[in-house]
Amino acid sequence: MKKIVSVWIMLTALLTLVSGCGFGPQSSTLGNTPKSGNTIVIGSKNFSESIVLGNMMYDLLKAKLKHVNVQNQPNLASTLVAWTSVKDGQLDIYPEYTGTGLVDILKKPASTNTEQVYQTVKQEYARQYHVDWLDPIGFNNTYAVAVPKAIAHKYHLTKISDLAAVSSQLVFGGDPEFFIRHDDGFPALMSKYGLNFQSTRQIDVGLKYLAVASDQFQVTDAYSTDGALIRYNLVVLQDDKHLFPPYYAAPLVREDTLKAYPEIKPILNELSGKINNETMKQLNYQVDVQHKSADDVARQFLVSHGLLSS
Image 1 (cartoon, rainbow, N blue to C red):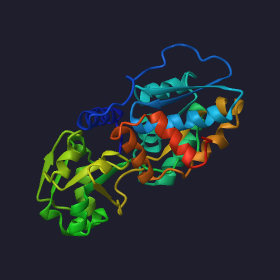
Image 2 (tube, one colour; image 1 turned 90 degrees about the vertical axis):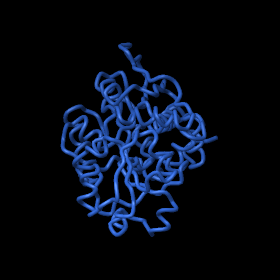
Image 3 (cartoon, one colour; image 1 turned 180 degrees about the vertical axis):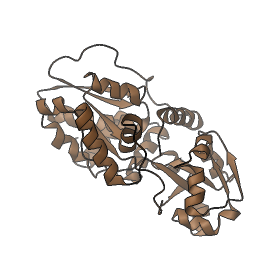
Image 4 (cartoon, one colour; image 1 turned 45 degrees about the horizontal axis):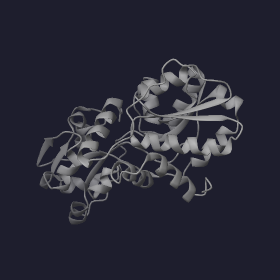
């Protein structure tokens, strides 16, 4: 999936309207103010998942680098703002996704080979930009196919390939972009899995979860870690034929920052393997649906997993 940041922004904004919850302060930029000495600045993009991850990194470094002025700059307006700030030296660290790095920054074709994508972004960022990808955190926020739990139970659906035998009895509804994405959208889904839905319906991205939960259609596209999947009791079907490209999150750190503060790598790598898709979905749910602050959600996770003292 070539994850376009504008779609993420629209998704979070519309989900806010549907759920009646807020996402914190207005998106920000770093401006042109130079970073002071002995300071590490951590950033995050303007959606809940990124802000939660950024807060985790901030809390860990703030607690364990006592001699450093650690600052947090959450809610940056876009991938472009965050990435430009890293290149310009105004930002040291932020969470990024392997697929975003591969396609949006390196301008390379999407790939479904998880390890190859990670190695490519790690090597090319180091070679071209002197920026290091640390270890993946564990979850993969990519496109997914979801159905209501009742539909999954009725038709015994656990994998996308299970839909082949029953798709003619079901209606697929999704956001307009998914229908026109040739390589990792609806056309590829139909072709790779041999699906033939009864009919299809295009619907605004912020309304589709409510619509599928109320049986206006039975199958929809999703992002695999959306908190709304929990709210509307939806089941993500396993992509058993590996249609959707990997979007694994990992900390991005400037190499000169790592040289100055080598402790950063082992500290942030403590997050590696700690958050799978289900856990990230739960964390997003707490922020997007239960209206908890991203700061509190991040800190509670770290404390509960023994990464931070209470």
